[in-house]
Image (cartoon, rainbow over all chains, first blue to last red; front, side, top):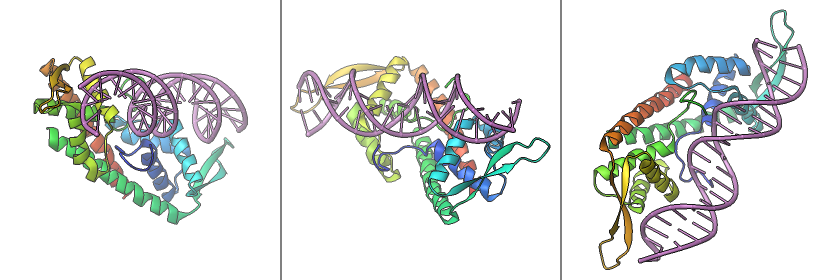
Length: 119
Length: 119
DNA sequence: CTATGAACACATTGTTCATAT
DNA sequence: ATATGAACAATGTGTTCATAG
């Protein structure tokens, strides 16, 4: 689809990238942890993101120049490396959040309009 | 994707099928007319459905046993046949509308939650 | 087992083509 | 030109497979 023309609701990817940014802002961040939190938090609304979409969202944010990867040894006796993230460009992150907010608001309007028009 | 498990927002198809039902309820209905109305009505919100999705929605509703096709000669001097629709099973239509309302409400909740969580 | 990632497959949707008036 | 429909192509996302602790 060319442009942002004719688009319907916000995509899952953008939705998750937003949450990934938020998790990094709160310094609690690696992939599986993010997924578990989101699953718990959204399960009552019937939404459970899978691990691939989480990783794709994180990788996207790296490609966007917004996040960067760091490796870190997990606490405990396990000596297992996990991948943690920090901001590569926080200004870009804030800009992205602003863009996604616009799309979230727009999507809300679409749904609200349908509810008003039809019911 | 199996079940309704793990699902994100409502699909465009369901959204449009809802509007097609509404148009038939209002007895003003053929494909292009529906598309033009929807485009005009949603353009301010950045959404312009294309003709293929409109027709797919109508065909779906026939397959669902909710609508049926009728042919009709268009008014004016043009003698061009158009395809109009009426209900094949209005109870089914009402049931479908109820189901879609649930999904619309659920989708609204997802978006609202993201707005609350992140901004 | 957990964590990360890629590959593959399917589902949804957009674009183009066909046919008839 | 308008209207309908199908075919094709690209995207988005879910499922499975691979690798490493």
